[in-house]
Length: 284
Figure 1 (cartoon, helix red, strand yellow):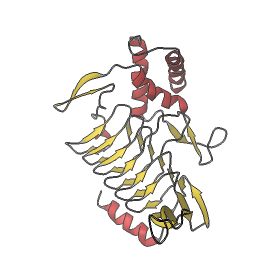
Figure 2 (cartoon, rainbow, N blue to C red):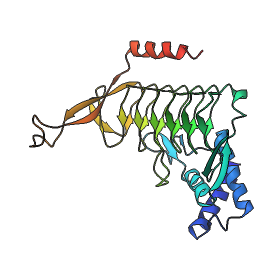
Figure 3 (tube, rainbow, N blue to C red):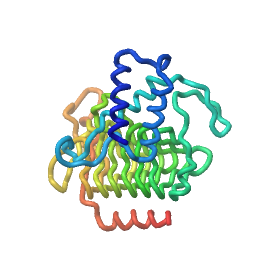
Figure 4 (cartoon, one colour):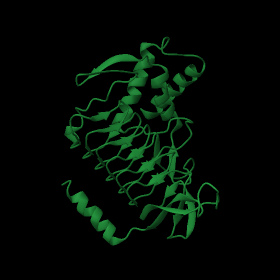
């Protein structure tokens, strides 16, 4: 099914680049897009996925460009329409996702503010606290907590048994289609107020301290391997923000030199793991 759907999306993309628009899109075209969104919601296709061998990136993940093109086609080939959900009127190209499949899989979404757009996947035994938002193309794994005021952006890949602390932003990415989305691997714990953007990759079982900004533009000082890296937190690290001396140096506008934010990554200490386990026990 996936191969045939990929071919159908590729054909639609070629016609879209040749000038196909929402006004000229047929019912068959829209049916293909609906099938594509359903496959995303079921977890049958993903914007990126762990892989090995040819096509895998240096972080062990493969970006599925055709999936990101399929998401973009849903904006290019659909008209904005007046819609209603829960007594609220809104205008969008996509309706919100139906949630009647969640209960059978043990997934909970609390009322008055949990919003899931069409084309988003939530696994089994997830929890979405209100208010929170999961955007089109995002993939949230089994047992993951999306806490209050969290946003999971378009095509973001969040693994199983991940804890997203309150007021956390997981950035989205659609264009360029070959760019990798944000990835948060299995077992990671992300502290409240974090921002993870621009295709940053958080490794398995990492613990990220509160209010940490993770972007490929900021250096990560990995004290385990004693190296400076960009764009990733390796697995089994505890990461937090520190300020390091900037190359700007002294300047008339600020006495005493200038500093810039950086991220420090250390081994995940056992007491940090224990604290995370105790908090997870509250979900039982």
